[in-house]
Amino acid sequence: MKIFVEDLLSIITVVPRTMGLALLVMSGSFLAGLVIAAAKMSHNKVFNMLSRFYIWYVRGIPLIVHLFVLYYLFPKNAPVSVVLIVTYVLYSAPGQAENIRTAIQSVPKGQYEAAYCSGLSSFQTFRRIIFPQALTVLLPISLTVYLGNIKGISVAFMIGVVDIMSQAKLCSALNFGYVEAYLAAAVVYWVLCVGLTRLFTYCEAILYRKKGIAVS
Image (cartoon, rainbow, N blue to C red; front, side, top):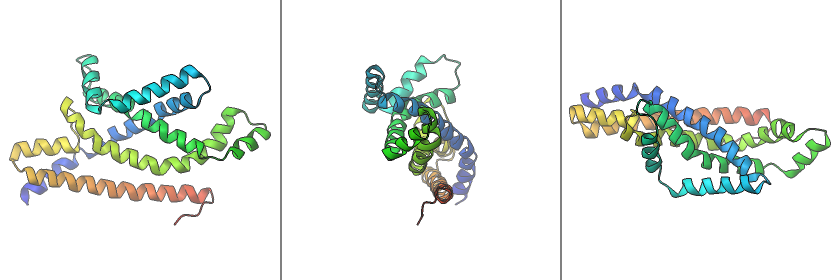
């Protein structure tokens, strides 16, 4: 029990770093995904083809391969956290692009027509009418993406980035309490997932109420 508590306290110290890295990855991949989604929905054949090729490429190559390729492409003095963020952003962007595209296409076409009839430009229509409605679809998906990033970052231990799982491995190597260390990591992950799920559900309910959408 003593080893478990010590490992738990040690793992908790890296939670803020893990959550921060996951948030940066989600934000970066969202922005990159927005560009890719725009390219895929574009009538420009070149942009459309390039976006589709990039999505196919990422889907066909494991994350660990991208991680090592970029790790050795970056300068040797580059911070490993930067390598991690860039790798995960590039790898997650296609998935975010598909989420964004699906959310945008879920908005009825009548909303576009009404906006254009009101004299709004395409950009104004997207910013004021389409994106706010698409956001109600994207918000629940964002929780899944964020939680996936928190758990997926554990792979980055192979290039020296210490997160929750990595800290558990370090603890088990020091005291040989492998069961205690991994159980402590499981508890931390579970508490994070439950807490963040409740937080996102609360934010989602507020967003829906502002838009007059009934929530259960």
